[in-house]
Length: 274
Image (tube, rainbow, N blue to C red; front, side, top):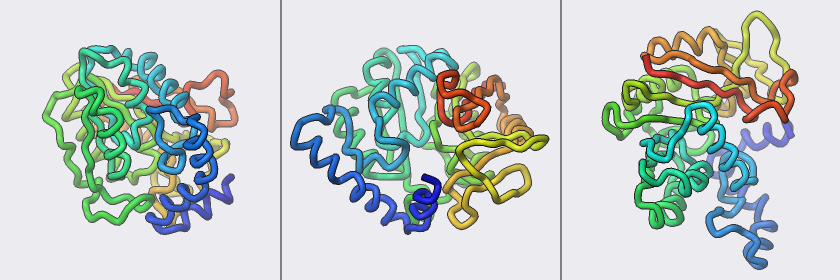
């Protein structure tokens, strides 16, 4: 799997999306002909982030949000990097008196969400934000200078699944600042990371061989491939943004964490607004 991932990261952004579509074409064709694809599930070749277990994974993420930040049906929530709606589909049957907003840098994901979610649930809204990411696109807008298109103190809760794991430190700092800005005074944010303790060697199914000051990279040629952040740097970035780290729960990417005892593959972090 690591060798396949390495070859995948060597492809240009456009070819990565095309490659996934070609890889999953046989099963997408089969599911289309047999009617085995759920009506609220995209083709596997169009799911450009995460695994292909779209519906079960979305439900697991919803349960994580309920468990760690007490997500309520009345909350106003922000999904940062909403992708093609994996979590939104699960939440569409739950958030009824509140609102959901999500944005993403891949336009086809937003188009799918508008068509399959927003039209049925008008309190679910999606924005395409053309932000540069060397994994998916070549846009000029940099995440480290990006301002979220939302008002101050607009949201009760925010969340990011597998977003900070694909960003560089200046970008993470900017997003934490923006999350703090758009959260209400008692707001919370749940995000997933790959974290490490500088005093010991972390071992797991992911490898981060390129060491820098406070973080490690999986691939120094594709900087958005995957990043691991040290816990001291995480705490400092949170503090600088007006947030504090409330909870850290290890993911089952770690060798010392059993899958049945973990809620996510990546490490879960809960931020609270100071």
